[in-house]
Image (cartoon, rainbow, N blue to C red; front, side, top):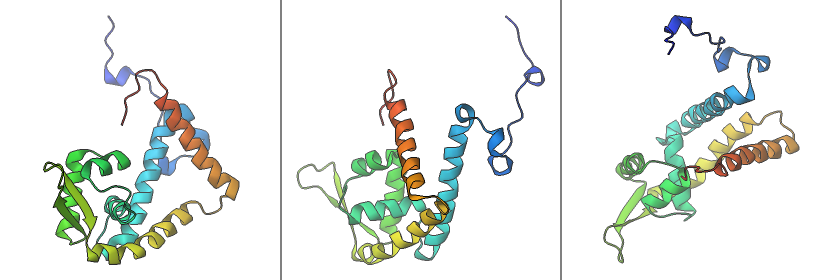
Length: 171
């Protein structure tokens, strides 16, 4: 068995995503970093837009989903957003403290809580998506319509490729 000291391992220089060029990136090695960086940048810009509303990028999604009545339970939100139950519970508590979300016990299953927007949350909701869409529009600035559709298609293709792996974890 050969033991390597950290200084003996030869690794190519991995530049920061902020400071690299396209030629320095490899799809197989840098896909995760690029997706993570894009997600982080989107969240940072959405957070800045929503700051006057006292909302974060994670919180606005919950408000919009509840407004659309897409989901109405913690479990439903976790599944929809691919979120941990503990983190979602804390996020919901913050939204409840802000007066945006109401929680009521389910009549049929006393262990479940039904979620809905408060009047304050309903009033705030129409203001959210135009601000969020400004960020997404800026991110897609310079893309043609076919390119905008292509990026969605390619992301879905990558997701589906991972979902079809043998023994793929399901989230």
